Length: 155
Image (cartoon, rainbow, N blue to C red; front, side, top):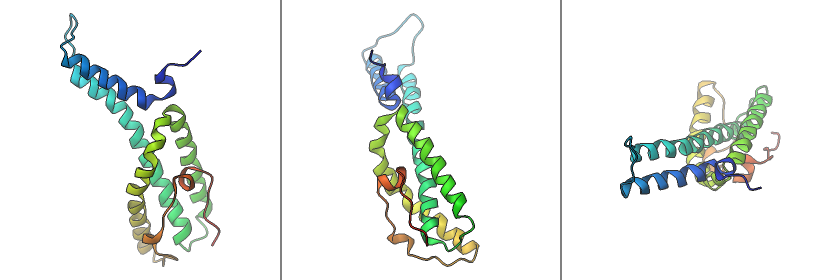
């Protein structure tokens, strides 16, 4: 038996439901208690957007820690950075299980978050008096490197 869409791809379901609600409101469908179709649709849409926001946040954390692993000379915090990457990847796996259509968002989120992660690492290095091992601006990561099992080589 096929599972309903809201159980297999929540993001796609929220987007479709919001569109259907807006269409119903546009043609004047109403009930004995008037429904604020546009705002109900917006609330449903926001449920899906919150998943995208969570994905963006988790990708940002992974990128920050990957950049630290590559660019910073510190060795003591490396294990913690690796643990954080693993935790974020596991959370992303769960998010993508609930909303597989989020996967197509990953490349754009990488492009948006990598410069932010680089700036955060550069500021952290400056605060701690550390010299970067590499040019952060030259770093690039594929979607598979960020959400897969890839780790940068040991320094």
